[in-house]
Image (cartoon, rainbow, N blue to C red; front, side, top):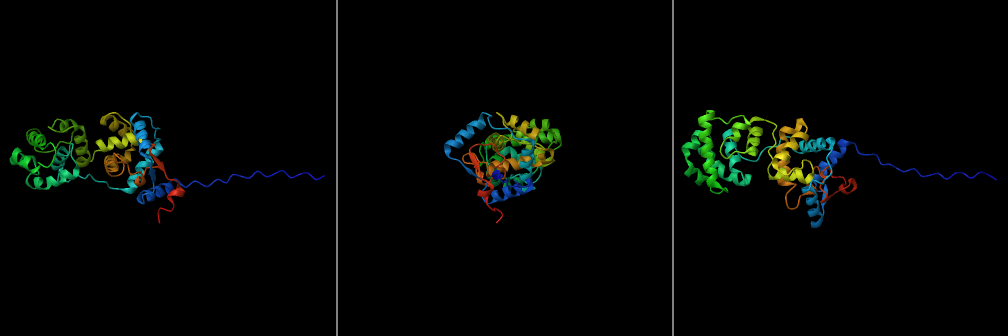
Length: 280
């Protein structure tokens, strides 16, 4: 009797993985087309935010962090701050005025101001009353006007009318805290600082990239994990991401270039099949 041939076990067909570079390009294209991910329902989003607030999200790997900033750089190679300014002094004033206000609101008021006073000496000559009138559309304008005149006087008396390239000296100025000092050091002097505002604080905690209970906690964690070659622009990439994509109420995950890396469970990342040929 002839021997029976053994049944062949069908081999599993393994689809080849996309090269990392191709995957990144596909994800960037998907974000541009609004196909990167789908935001879940309200209950799932609230639960996701709760997990993030309690620091219960998975940790990012070093490779994932590097990939995230590679994508930010690819999408926006030369990011810029949105506060209008002429020189380091007007930048300092603009950042002081932007506390608890929007950059857009500050930018509406400052052109007329900076036309009259773009140095500490001119600002002091302008006077607090006139300054108040020019910035009255900005929240807390009375306190801010007082601080701007006081910091202008201090710059003249202690720094020869120049904005100091020094954190301690900046933070000693009236109305200037750590965040303002970081912005000035970064934009005016090219220092790789990260100024954590409400947007960066939200992005750091929601994505799991840098979890912290205070802005300083988030800043220290970002400084520890952001690759050195991306640190100079990290502040701008993260603030723009928080302002226009990872917004507070309902994040626009469909437009997120790092949706597949983000650890927030309130969204579902689209598969390559769901993304389709996003380059078309």
